[in-house]
Amino acid sequence: MGLFDDLEGGEEEHDSDERWIVSYADLITTLFALFVLLFALSLEDARLRAGIESVARMVGARPLSGGLRPGVAQGVAGAAPSHATAAQPPAGAADAVALSRPDSAAGRTFTRSDFLQLKEIKESLERDLSTFADSGVSLKLTPEGLVISLAAARFFKSGQAEIEPAQEPVLKAVTLNIGNLKNRMRIEGFTDSIPIHNSRFTDNWDLSAERAGNVLRYLLERSSLDANRLSLAGYGPYRPISGNDTEEGRALNRRVDIVIRPNASPEQ
Image (cartoon, rainbow, N blue to C red; front, side):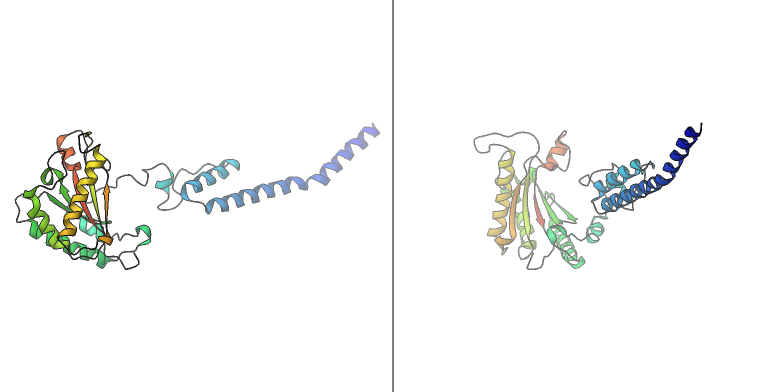
């Protein structure tokens, strides 16, 4: 019995000597969780939430169900992706929205005065185009710049890229308003989703690019625009602004857009 008591007492003494290991292990686990959390905070939003929830599960805490901070929750917690279409502003508020959201794409920072210049051009174009019963031109001021949209149904025959002679007075009015600008411009061609294949055009890419090219050449030949500040793009049936399941929607998608960028500084 004495021997048993000696053995039992020795075991208790051993437990007492090693008890500090439990507290030390808890401390190391807590520090590890802290450093993982700090590392996660330095990551982008999507990885941030994943890192924090991983740590939360590891230490037995409940994963976050709300936002991490204002402006982050929607992007992390499964809301609409960044390229989703934003809610449209009320009618008549488009100009105010554009002027309140200066663009900084590609490292360019535009000021309110840059957008005011475009707003003045838009108002001047509206006055001049109002003399035409159906100009086929729509104007929109966006954060990217002033978009002058030429309806293909008015400016081109179906499946062709030559500018209709009857629409040249309208295009001339547009050219007179923008022909002396120093802004960068991009001429963009678009079609609907119905495939085209004839002796001249292989597909809608060809047709959209050719239409945009003819509008670009018209502007250069009848204005003092600097060709170095112009660019051209043909998007074919892509980037539609309406559905292609109705004739009205397809008509809206067939267009050539003249996108006038806000007045940029020389290095831009």
